[in-house]
Length: 537
Ligand SMILES: Cc1cc2nc3c(=O)[nH]c(=O)nc-3n(C[C@H](O)[C@H](O)[C@H](O)COP(=O)(O)OP(=O)(O)OC[C@H]3O[C@@H](n4cnc5c(N)ncnc54)[C@H](O)[C@@H]3O)c2cc1C
Image (cartoon, rainbow, N blue to C red; front, side):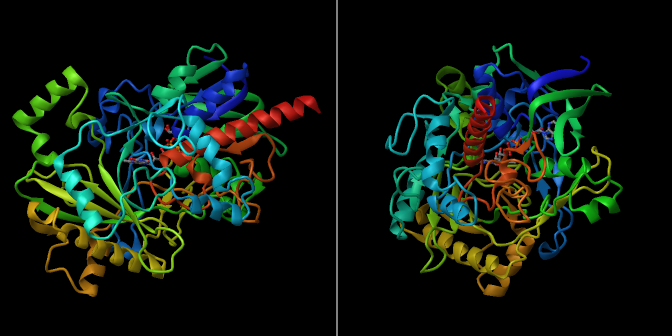
């Protein structure tokens, strides 16, 4: 392949990029979609429970690490990110969680015009195909299949009962009228297979001759004509090639790579860019700032007298589950990670939940979510859903292939620790409730002897971990630190937008795949509207 021409060049075929490319190619526009990783041939992508095998698999994963985190005893945390068609939607835990209406109303109040809950709801609905729920909130007929769990282990039912005994109301659809309370998880899964955006949005669009997907193509630099972006240079099979964009370049590289590509292309804080030898195209100080991510602590129990995922994941039970999956498309191989969850407030007086407690009828070895323990267990991951801590992602050098410095500054904001401590207390209350207590042999993490506030604080700093929902490094807004405006156009540069998780002003109350796909739906609709208006003018 030599140089290419397109109307739109989309960089990154992840949750957002596949959605944007599919929508932009609907009306005949020529779209080129560049993806750094390979096609999504790996079978573990498509079998839901295969996600655990992709957590650190370099064939499909960027496998980033943070710099040593000061508040976490200088631990460097693993940051998996999909590097494959479908991006992180091809390796994630498949939970479908839209967040709380207050998240979006909050964005609108801080200057993101058009992003209130009422204004984003139609785009959530447009994207999805969910058979249940209230049609006022839920969509049918969209490309993204959303389903309830098809097999539910009894431990999950006991958790849902226990949470109600602990004072949380049952919410039948946390993506509907009421988020707060306890509810069963919903997944982006179609039947027995993962519903990545590659397998859904992109697969439906792939037959269009005006859409060209280029895997194994790493975008290395944006091209400019003055203050207008005109195309992208990319590296493929060791060669540098170019693609020109007659209308727009759309960055969908995600929270790590979108700000990084802007920075190495000369858009970012001018003094910093000069210090690493990048010629400045535009001084945009917010690029790479405002990094916000969910941080969590796990409370784990050893299970007795019940089946957990740990037993099903090895030996004869695994073979039985495999046969069941092949024969019926049901069973443990259709599981994501979390089967039920609670949205809760850490204290009186809050307008909306600031904690998400995620229940897994299984337990993991300390130090991450990659390996299941041999012994049966169950886990509540206590997630700080609306963190105040903010960090940065900055290029280390002018070389686009050099990995950026990731500094999330977890737990640097004073209030974040207190919210997590309140969440651990809630998790313990649920484990102690009559419905769940009989199945617990003991609390294994942090352990019953970890009860005082100093001990719990120490546990958070020593064992707390990230939940892989980074956002905010190309923040949307109308103030000087904003990177994109409310129509997701890079401020001060023509022909360039960012559409992915990086534009969120703050992380939503819940997992971030559904909000990212909503942003992509809305962003693509805005591009098409603007193109129509330009044509009519
Ligand atoms: C392990 C894990 C589990 C998760 N579980 C859940 C979950 O259960 N539910 C949920 O809602 N969210 C979950 N998330 C988070 C969610 O999946 C992400 O927030 C979302 O996928 C982000 O979408 P994105 O489009 O911003 O980025 P991505 O989906 O990461 O897409 C970015 C794409 O751009 C490509 N790219 C980057 N740079 C370049 C370049 N220079 N040139 C070409 N291509 C490039 C990447 O390879 C990638 O394909 C999880 C995340 C992880 C890591």
